[in-house]
Image (cartoon, rainbow, N blue to C red; front, side):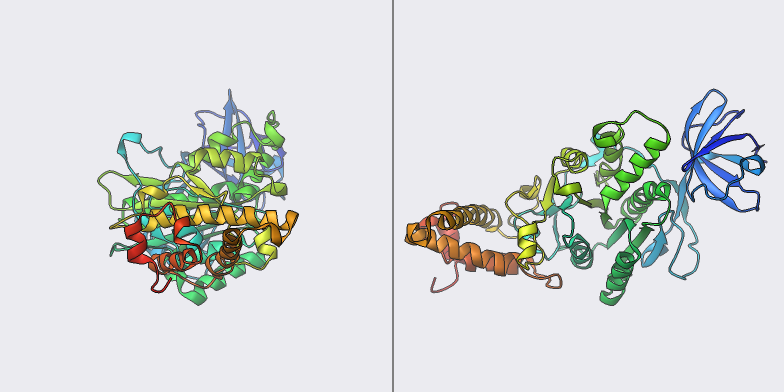
Length: 458
C-alpha cells in the first residue's frame, strides 16, 4: 500500500511542493488525487531534506492544496510498449488517441533510457534513401545518424517532415523499417495535416505517431520525445527494425524546458534557457545509433525552427554541436516557390562519405556530389557578379555556370513534396545538369567516370 501525503504546501505553475516526505527519489512517478477524486500524474524534479518538488503532467488547474492527496510510486516514468504500436497514434504521454484498442504491453520501459556504452556502438555506414535529391546526393543520411533540419519562420518544414516520413527507406534490405514521429507543441491544424497525410499515403501503416498539441501542458511536451525514443529503441533493439525518428519542433520542447526552469526559479543561462540545455538535448540526441551485434538502428531527424531565423540562437547552436550535420531551409528559395527549399551550400552531413559509393549507392556518387557543390557555388558567384556589373561582364563559361545554377534550382532542388526520386534517378539528373558545363570544368570527376556516365551526345 502506497503512503498518502496531504502535505502540499504550494503550487507554482506546473510545480507542486510536498513536505514531510520520506524515502522519495529523483525522477520518481507521482499520483496526485484531487478533491474531486480525479487522478493526475507527475514526476519528482527535486528532493531537499523532507521536501519534494513535483511537476504535474496534466497541469495544476483546479487543485485545492488542502484536500489534495499525493502518492509516490517508487518507480520512474515508464511506457508500455508492444509491436502493435506501429500504425497507431498516441498523445505526448503515450496514451492512444486514435479510437483504437488499448495496447497490450509486452514490457514496460523507463522513458529516460540508458546511455549507450561507446564501446557497444557500431559505426553508422548504411545509406538511407529519403527520395529527396538535395539530401540523398549532397547531404546523405546514414543509418544511426542524427541529422537535424534547421528551419525559419514560415518555411515548410512540416511538409518536408511528412515527405521524409512517407518516403524514407533502407536500400537493398529486406529488414523491417518503421518511422516514429513525435510532434511537440504543434497546432490542431498541423496535427490534422500530419495525421491526414500519413493516413492518405499509407505511411501510417509503418509509423508510430506521438502528438503533443500547443494547448497541452508544457510538462507533457518534455515527455513526448522521450516516449518516442523509448518506442524507437524497443522496435530497433528488441524487434530488429530500422527506425527513423522525426521530432518536430525541438524549439517548442526547449521553450517548455525554459518555462519549467523559470517556475523552479533557477538561474537562467543564455536567452533565458536553463544552463543545462546542452546536457538535456544531448540526452535525447545521443539515443540515436547502432549497437554491435544488433540488426536494428535508431536514426534521428530533429526539426527545429530557428527563433528570429538566427542560427547562432542557443537551440540550433547547441544542436549543431551534438549532431552530425544539419539541413538548412532557405527563405529565398521558398519565396521563389522552390519545394523543398533546401539551401545545399551551408547544409552538411558529416557522415555522408560513410554511406555512399559502390555497393551502397553508386561509384559516381562522391565525385558528382563534389562537382555539383563546386559548380553551384561558382554559379551563385557569377549571378551576383552579373547583378553588380551586368551580364556583359560575364565570360562565356560564367554564363554557362549561371544557366547551370538556374536549372539546378529549378529541376534538382525544386522536385516538389510528392516526388520520390531513387538515388539512381538523382545521380542521372546530376549528370544531365553537369553536361551544361564544358568537360574541362569537371575537375573533380575522373575521365573514366565522365566517359561512363555522361549522357550520350553531351
